[in-house]
Amino acid sequence: MWRLIKLLLFLVVLAAVALVAYAYIGPVFFPADFAAPSEVVTKPVTLGVD
Image (tube, rainbow, N blue to C red; front, side, top):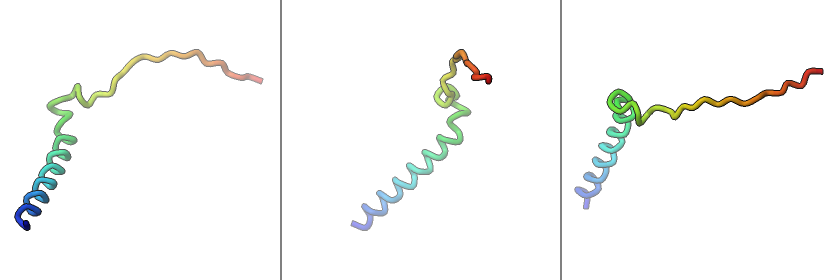
């Protein structure tokens, strides 16, 4: 039973390290996945001048 708990704990730690590595290294190899969608937005603005 203890071996199973150690294995699960090891897999959780490994998954956390992989997630952090993907967050830091991912934009270098997959820039399209991390880019924010961009579009031009134009809206008229009415200023209330008194």
